[in-house]
Length: 480
Image (tube, rainbow, N blue to C red):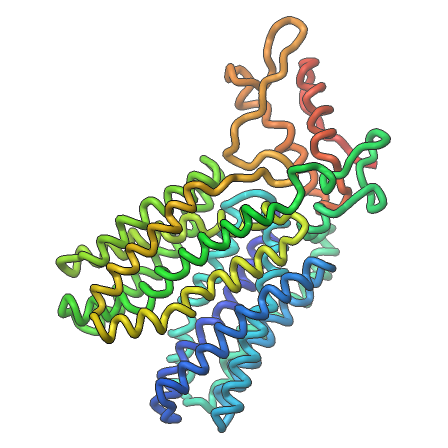
């Protein structure tokens, strides 16, 4: 895991999602100061989220065809430009276009940044959770920043909202020379390693060796990917609906104040950040299927607690548990999607984080109509019934090893017998702490070299296994 690079990418994610959260935070000010109607601000919300979700898979395809690291700073800088210009614009049409521009910038950022985060973190679920929680923190900071700037200076001070992006863009420019000075190489996109062959510095150890792109485990599994997208669609519907209605549920159904409703929503957001980090730790220690299944199975009764909460403390507790549980599988969603489509990590990120996540927003009007006609408790009861479907599908999703080899938390490789009958690094536990699965060592070797060699992981693992079988210490294999 390249911690420095991962931390830097998490910081860019914070900045990017700061602008994603700034747009809904600006809507109340647009209604009060520019006298926009509910329909008008709904149109702005669609310009931000709807257009972003449509463009994100397109940027994913682009980033898969050729690494485009420049889309990361271009994305969050464009988002900042759109948000600042929306505050300074005069007409509704110009405001709508600026918000749409910000949505396109947000969409451009996610596929290449997610691919780079996966390359920096390897198959570690904790690494992806760190990257993801950066965006969660940015979204949580957005309302306070917008209130501070626009509340104090009005829309004429909207240009100040672009300051975080300008600072991060400057750091991005300085990052290249600093990394070269330190002798660091940028992590390659997972797609580069998946498609590398002999012509691109492929396997060099023995003639006729296949690259990992040719092995069955690295083929694109569109069927499993489609099932995962359906699960994420089912995940996004309760997530978005609870986000938009749990505060009103506390106020109208449990007779709480507006401050208490805001506290419930804050609890939900903070619990999501905790769940993201916890899910990464669980995934690395026990396997990502554990975090996936645990998240969905715990979220279902927690949602029932929200729907049938008899008192405010029960609602707060249920909301906190629901927030943690919903984000336990978040890192697994991303890494599993990229392992289902190892040749198209940008497309996988764009579809799962773009179109699939947008489904909850598209269903919001229907649940809003249901709330107007039948009340908020009915909304949560229907939501509970709908959520059963993705829960059942999630626990049946197949896992898939990353193309480098075993996943962290996966079962240990079979032990290797020696001529004297002893077993090295095997199931008897004699060397379990000193020797690690050969595939994992190969994976780390590839990550340390930026994935630029196109190594055949299976061939390398066999050679490491031979060293272990002879009783020798597993040593580093240098390439070329």
